[in-house]
Length: 370
Ligand code: ATP
Image (cartoon, rainbow, N blue to C red; front, side, top):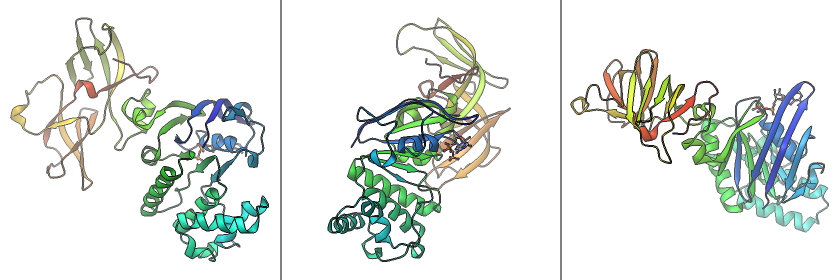
């Protein structure tokens, strides 16, 4: 187990600034995901950690040691690649044993270590098989075994699940999670799949255009996104947003107005005095936090924290149903019970509880803390 730190790390390829300035502290034994859309610099960051790419600027530390100039094999890291990079002409044993043979580990020890890892990953029966005779999931496990057998201080994963079909992807995701629970080795995982990141990670670094927009415990990233970009990137379905004008007055009223709606809440700040606000903003709410008001009579028709609209989409998932409620150009997605049979065009109301709302400054996307 090891602590890993990046300090103002940057990488340029000619005129392309793939990574602009990344600083991250990855605690001992943590599972950390670099999450972001294609081209945001995730793989380049991982490659610099592994030593496969030289940094243009900045430093990398493992357990307080500056390893920025160390060769890949000196860093005690093992990488699992997207395409597995297995040796097709070798059998499973050969693939797992390869790095140990290169390192001139004694034969008996190689055999013992390969068998131990193969047992953990249920590959024992396949050790003599050629790579071309394996399924995608089995190849994935060989790639994991090849990393594990090196007994690395740190595991690096570059989108290892992206070539698998949906069912296998879910299964392998669980295997990686169990493996981490078992080994407790520091793991750094790259993906563009926010669901994968949420399920696997202790900490998530959300990246955009070569920078980390927010880094923190997965739950914080979901519950307290510090930027509109993070809020709408994380979560399925996507957080609903309305754009309008936010006002907080010092007598404790809070309003949000757009062309088609006016919402009002009593406002009690959680800490300190009220700071008046008068700004263009985005209101955000997650589907599970918005409340559908089923009993129309119980709804004061002009209740001030309620969004009135009509159902424009119904998406049943089995365990939950998501409905979209729209009015004018605004739409809010609400999670409802699956036995609630709603049809498009029915008028409905949605309560937006004050303590579940997120606000983001329209000018720069930053969270407005209320
Ligand atoms: P993906 O999910 O598509 O792999 P990513 O977030 O991992 O994307 P990187 O592969 O790190 O992104 O690439 C970041 C940027 O750097 C991209 O604009 C990419 O085109 C560029 N880039 C990466 N490697 C090189 C290279 N060897 N030469 C030139 N440009 C590169």
